[in-house]
Amino acid sequence: MKNFDFRNPTHILFGKGRIADLKDQVPADAKVLVIYGGGSAERTGVLAQVREALAGRTIVEFGGIEPNPRFATALKAVEMIGKEDITFLLAVGGGSVIDATKFIAAAALYDGDPWEILTTHGAVVKGAMPFGSVLTLPATASEMNAGSVITNAEKGAKLPFMSAHCYPAFSVLDPEVTYTLPPRQIANGVADAFVHIIEQYLTYPAAAQVQDGFAETLLRTLIDLGPKALETPKDYDIRANLMWTATLALNGLIGAGVPQDWASHMIGHEITALNDTDHARTLAVVLPSLMNDQRGPKREKLLQYAANVWDIRTGSDDERIDAAIEATRGFFESMGIKTRLGDYDVAASGIDHIVAALKDHGMTALGEHGAITPDDARRILEAAQ
Ligand code: NZQ
Ligand code: ZN
Image (cartoon, rainbow, N blue to C red; front, side, top):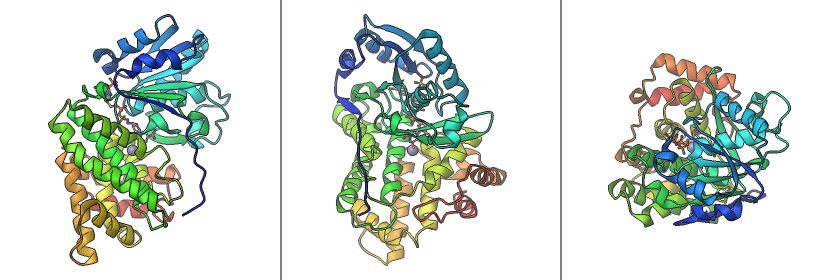
């Protein structure tokens, strides 16, 4: 196992009716900016619950954060913070709203050009405004991590940043607010969480039995409950388990002390920057192809994955690996997520664009060995067509 630091300061308030507890989490004298997305939080009554919990506080609202949140929109919120003397931010939504809020929290205290926060992947962030979240879509674990991904439409760039200053102070996870999710978003959330686990697990053995065991349990839970959530939309226990699984998938716990990959994510971000494909769907395209392409360096973990996650134990090494890759693809497809690049209108010229963008963004040494180059990414994408 590698040396590691593990610290996660986010206070989780999990369960039915927990939005009411916001009153004890948001400082009594705060002037709060409530940040939300395109209107689902209004339609579903989540914002009404938030307003009720914060009755008596001074609240200003900022709606309109897009899926794959835009830099320009986030800057409008930063402007509002200055104008309205805001002291606390509350994100109400999915990963996009929480990611945008992290960026807004950091940009509000940053003196330079805010785009530098993304180009330095967070290195220039020396502080951030305090913020909390009310999660409405289990997927990204943004509710309990310090990462954020922002899209600059003008520059055609979707870049991640991380900063220890950007953990939410608290996050409310009420599984009941996820009942209103359309099937497409339920499936996206399950697939995204699945690939988060894979990025931290499917590398090479690091004698990390506990991390591997947690990761395998989380993967099996998603395989079991993802399709059930689509079949039985209002089952509390299914939603509660999925919600907590997605958070644990990327809150630092299973990634501590182990090598990490993230190549599927970095290649996937360029697909989204190209044509706004849903984040999870880009991963479902890249991952099966990347597993096949990287079967050499990932051999031992692919065999462990086949046995412990899919119960594939017979056949030659290559046959078991083939079966595990097909099972992974079949899992995504069974939830209605297509796994071929052609399903998302990316032609050969699109691959050229993605490869050039990876080079432009310095994504030239990806994967757990830093050995996946843009040329390798081209081969992976061509095989995904
Ligand atoms: O915008 P509104 O109207 O709120 O609707 C949203 C949006 O259209 C809707 N929605 C959310 N909760 C709902 C709901 N609809 C009905 N009922 C509810 N309870 O769902 C749509 C998608 O929301 P979004 O927040 O975009 O989805 P998700 O949570 O999947 O977030 C995706 C973003 O997170 C980034 C992705 O790149 C992408 O930009 N990621 C962030 C990570 C992190 N911070 O650690 C890691 C991930 O790998 C990922 O990159
Ligand atoms: Zn993701």
